[in-house]
Length: 268
Image (cartoon, rainbow, N blue to C red):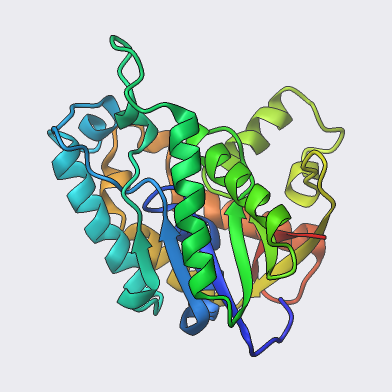
């Protein structure tokens, strides 16, 4: 990241853990100039029972979301993010939006339009700052793809006001890494860790080089999402281990001096 004293970071997090799991090192490094916007942090008006919440030990959606909002606040506070810079929007996670047994109550195009309008307002508030906006790169989860595509379109409309970066969102990015290794889509098993191409976009890769202290803060913050480590699926959701693996692997690939790093992609 270049040394620019006048910029402000806006990290767009689809869910209440994505920013920390993915860019916790950057948050620790630049907490004073960073704002976190979580998109799908709404609580259903009627308590719902979903498989993921049950696996995390919650009896329904109300209990789950209230606790997860608290976990997110504690994690961000631990990284130095102030309360005024934490914004949780009232959109429902994919698991709450629709039921397999009923017609969709929340048409996806209406959701996209509403999110887009709300994010435009937030960006307008920051118009006096040079903005660096960070969005997830993965499209494995529908919510992540929605967020990515909305912001890319906003960027095309407001290109002169913002610098846009894609970040490797965990654990979905890691899942893509594993699947592409398994199916041998890439000639080199490390290639997905090094090169990402988004259709119709030219990206310049940049490294957020982290000290041991910054990476340690990221791991400590990640562990504050206790419910996500209590899940019965913890064997495939052991996020701290994956963070360490990816970070060390990329340090080896890029041959940097710092012990850890996060990789981002600036849209040109």
